[in-house]
Length: 287
Image (cartoon, rainbow, N blue to C red; front, side, top):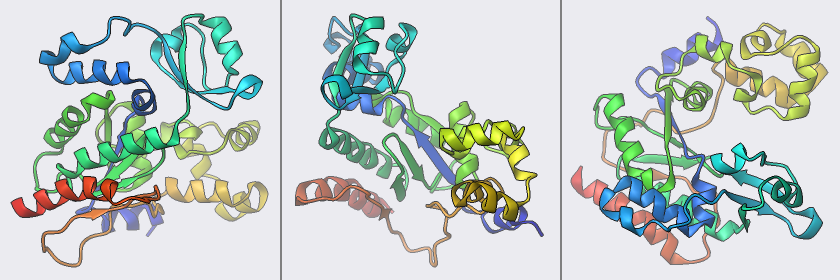
């Protein structure tokens, strides 16, 4: 039995959800964007959105000539701004660009707020990067489409949430990237190599070998692949075939009501922890 088939058989009752919030870093750094997002979630707040909400926005890291764009919104992208550009080049293309210096504390705070919102809908949440979260979908047996809509509604203040589901994380991530709810192995095979989060240098090397999508990568010999291109590429191939250890998908040992939370930000104060515990305890009390 292939590893993909074995993984699928083990996790039929425990799928994983990938929740992407591409606008989260921008909303975390631009209070005006947050007000505009809140207006989208609640029409009664529409009057609170700032008048200059159409200004292109970005977030940059570094100072002086070393400053580079990390994230930008669609309006900035339409003007030619791209992540990785120097801030000077970005402003040369878009004079009206409103770019804020990366504030790790503000981004961490926004991510904690998103986790708290998700904990009202699922007992398991694990952050995975600046704008991605793994979650246990439909914990109460509700239809996955309804649960995904509830997630999108709850996270509307931070932008459009893209939800993907799958028996393992790589499938869920690929589905969320493409804007589809249910990830399948066939769809993953058609996806470009960056769906496996390979670095650009590895992708360029694979393309010179004629490997342009996930399906072509899976057809390569795994041992030879690891020897020639290194462990990161071999690990990406394993994720594509279902050997994906990312959580939360592990079945629970019992059915006792409980909530699990993974934080990858260090907490040096009690208040952020209490911020997460309140919705978790409320959920347990309703169980």
